[in-house]
Figure 1 (cartoon, one colour):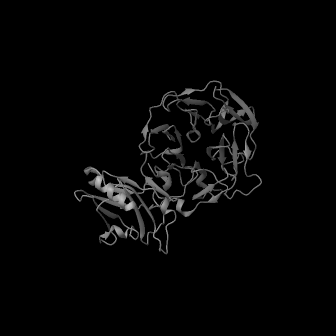
Figure 2 (spheres, one colour; figure 1 turned 90 degrees about the vertical axis):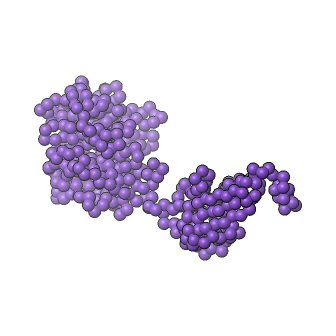
Figure 3 (tube, one colour; figure 1 turned 45 degrees about the vertical axis):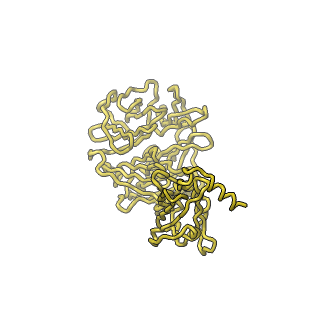
Length: 443
């Protein structure tokens, strides 16, 4: 009955249908008698580009997939009338085979499909590619830029990202310089106004809070700017000892935001925070074990709240710490590993950033003044740390350093700018950009 129906369709079909030789759908599956199989092959979706005559899987098979055996091919055509002839030619063999052998084809290299229409007046050729990821999606590729700024006397730096704009604060022997980039690649110097001359500005503690930049001088005066170029004094601010960072807005919540700082209050140091309206609120007295310089900091979102994290650094008595501290309001801080072993040496000048859902920590300088090039990861927000896998590590020509300026870009790169090989001295004029391969897919 079905044979009669097919013959009837072929007899009564209009002539233009008899000329059609387009593939409507394409799929692969493991051959019935194959000893080895490719997991999930039958669920792979293929894109058909009719104009270019190409068939391919947009989502590549996992890294390490080996196509060592023949596969079965399933094709449907764009009409009720099938082509008069279908042939395959795998590049792996260079031989044409009949469409009747579609259940055993070598797809280890591209395969051409030759289709002739029912009336034998039209022909079309497709090239099929079975894509496999050629990179480990979880490995990290690092790129090096040198020289970066062309300035050799930078003593401290801070890189800040805000809504796709990147600013680099650099204190030199001549004063403060600020650079801007839109892709974190080509940096241009800003012309600054409103900042005092003759004062030391703490570039390494510059902070962005609610799309406004803040920096303080060593005499405790706080300054702000909406664009990084034009600055003004923040009136009514307390005497700033140290800017710690920002607890900024989380989408879809109305939780308070805070610019976090350590301020001088009489003869003591206290935590303090400034809210969105510019109002300052005093917090707890800073404990002796809390770092006041040389710490690494980053922010992250957890449980619909924004957290500010500090790791390592130098305590007021000059000793180094391996502890991590966090806050959600800038005034009350909690030590995350006071009673646990963090798995991290006591150090200063570590580059810390939230990247790929984990806290990354690179480099630093220990109590013996030795620099590190080790990359540590924390999956529990800084409470414990472990050395990262080799495939994430920086390349061998990355010199051990402390005080590099970290930053994460909107296109998935972890940036490390500068850093120095000793506790004192000038910064290296270079930038390293690393990205986990899967974070670059589709860009």
